[in-house]
Image (tube, rainbow, N blue to C red):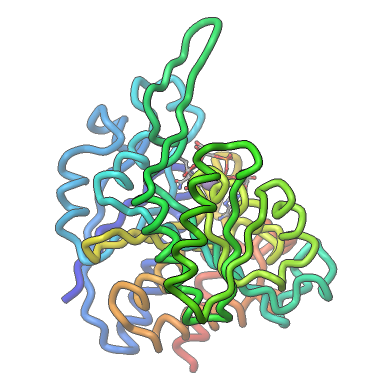
Length: 348
Ligand code: NAD
Ligand code: IPM
Ligand code: MN
């Protein structure tokens, strides 16, 4: 029996979590998967109910889980909160030591037309952004906000850099064996260290090719020639920005999932996007990002390859048929999309 802790969070979080859990119930039934779910307050919802975005009970439940699903957190109503929802998310990632955030991007031929970029540019794009998630400027001290000045600190230890690079190289070994290490080594000290360690780690993986790119020019090349990339490994802030940019390649932020892995075997799965307050509560959000995050959990935490693939292929097949939510130019509601996915799984 696998225990899954679900943290719906805020905004569209609850809607897309419900969607993913409905699909999970159907796929679990079909493949006789033994799963149990448990829901906990997190983010703004937890501020409202408990006065803190990461209540102790939520953290304890996560630590005792076999896998964690997170919707999204944040929203304008908590912008002035003493501890914001976003700080709860950072605290959770840190507490669980989830240092490796894997953000896959693929463009199957059948859905290439959904991209605002030309089909000949995006067709066949298939890469992962491996984002360092527990270091860099997100966590560096000191941090100060004053009336007339402010300060953030970007720090990385060699050990932090080495473990994320190793993780990315291992992923590349199971793929096309090309690592693009992204930094700003022409300016930043942390990036100079990053580049040196990337070279050292590359020597441990002689079958993998390493190339270095500066973050500004790679932001351009990612859109110009997305099929070039296989595994992009980068620091926390660059990975955050590049992965949202990368969502334009398949056509929407609303379909990109992620996995965050730590050291003890416990992982968290969440869409790369936020709580989308502008469309929350209207049953129009694209649930694919959350459904695919759930599929990543089935594969990467539980080793259930066949059900994971069936969920992923069904989502893309439904989109290829023109069943599309508003972010992809369609008029299908969240619940109608989920119904179409479930019908297809049950019919197959
Ligand atoms: P966002 O990612 O929430 O939304 C950006 C745009 O993408 C919006 O127009 C939104 O409607 C659209 N969008 C996002 N997901 C979608 C989906 N599934 N279907 C259809 N459209 C979708 O970014 P934002 O508006 O800058 O941030 C809103 C809040 O979310 C902020 O409080 C931010 O801090 C938070 N946030 C949380 C996470 C997280 O929980 N992991 C990630 C990013 C942002
Ligand atoms: C993400 C989000 C978070 C981040 C915010 C909400 C703290 O943008 O998961 O990509 O910057 O990591
Ligand atoms: Mn982000």
